[in-house]
Image (cartoon, rainbow over all chains, first blue to last red; front, side, top):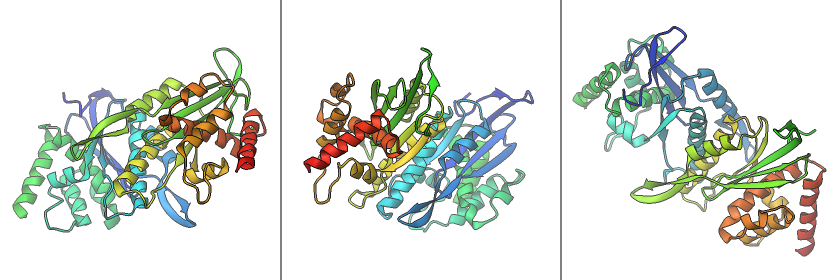
Length: 208
Length: 208
């Protein structure tokens, strides 16, 4: 069994696996896919990143809430060694230094919290997964809705996903879910979830 | 008793307190001051930030090592609720976006790891503690050696401190130690450690 997936007994005495995706922006989210066997998607849960308002130079700003993140991860109570795919940005010259610091801090905080709770954290560059899933294209502006549409199609049969991704502002949730799916697929798995990803990539490529 | 200091029984059945300071740069450190009563300094321990070399655009760069940080904090095994004073920078316009992201990530990672291990993390702006300890002055360039000199004088009677701060490159260690001392002092304590800090500030002001 690849390290991406771990079999473990639950309170129902069935073997389950799970994989986590994390979009570490302040408007990001943590997605948890679980199933009764490797690559089978039974449930999808998505949690918005806990935030708090802090005063920066006398104006209120939304920042990640570390206490809330720790509480969320503890509450999830996933088995040690669960794989979490975490997006890392890196500064972009288009952003100012304060924005880059805040993005770095959000990303680092998730990394610290997840490793502290025994997750097997795998970093993925934003460009890597977006190119692989054909969400980034040369000379094409990014459309935030595309992530939501792709995530909805990928998990069309899973209860609640369409509802979780209903609004424009839910693109952070969609990206967290796509990070989990992409991470699982990119590790070379050949199971139902990886097949879903393969199919959607093929469909998108045929349409472009 | 202020929240900054916690009494707890150790394996020797004596009441101890401790306070932690953290300079979250890649070249930073974690300082742990412990004593047999509040404000009494029996031991000072300083740990350089665990780092690893990663490839960024095909050149090797030193970055914080999250696994190492988690291992260090677990190894310390300090009681839940121990106060840790963590410096937060914020981007500076003089730095490029990549540098700001990396600094934010290092700072966020420490924050995530410390909160995950039940530390009571208190953030302090770099300018706040440096001004308070007279290390920053108007129209004066920063001298990295000043932090080391001040830290050495503050803990002149504590075994090993002079040795830990012997080299120029040890200024990250000195800053971690000063962060712990400043944090304890700034919370309004009136005990031996706070008195040490008060005296050194008075001496420095009289010399300027």
